[in-house]
Length: 202
Image 1 (cartoon, rainbow, N blue to C red):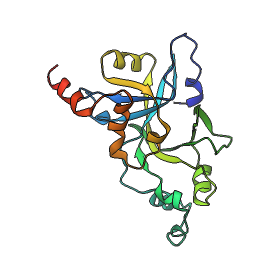
Image 2 (image 1 turned 120 degrees about the horizontal axis):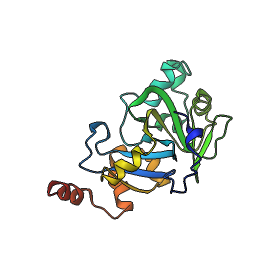
Image 3 (image 1 turned 45 degrees about the vertical axis):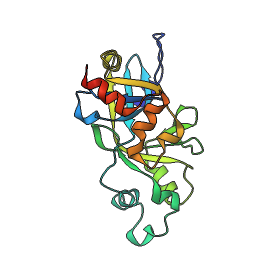
Image 4 (image 1 turned 90 degrees about the vertical axis):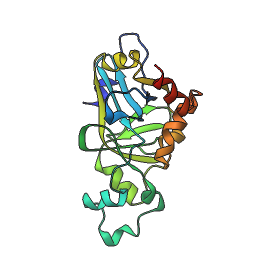
């Protein structure tokens, strides 16, 4: 799925680009249980986003070594921000493919502006820049993505699978991944414990 082909919505309905999807307790797909998804593209053709609150089993320095961007001896010279970048399970599609969500102070030929202060770059160039200390001020690495065909996401929302709200910059890049679900719900004034109890009595 290509981000650019999904960014132009022409059917007159509202786009969820730059919004969070917050999984409801009754989410049937276990892969998205308690997920917070950042939507980076949404049009009549479908939608694409990234789970931003589920960690991968490797660190950012591990990833740089696997990609031969740094060696083990160079790892200790990584800038502090590079050492702290979270690596997340972005979604069930193309899980070997990497993307970097980042602040808009970094730009390249492959960078796509998503919304406001957040951009997306899917190439190795940004990883090399981060390893040299010249990358964006804020970033999160995701492997894989979540994709929806035309009308699929709207159907899931209508079936109470997701809550939606405008995304929050600080939550996107928060290193405390486990806190993101509650923080995203708090934007809507929802207590996770209350939501779970309501689901149990549906």
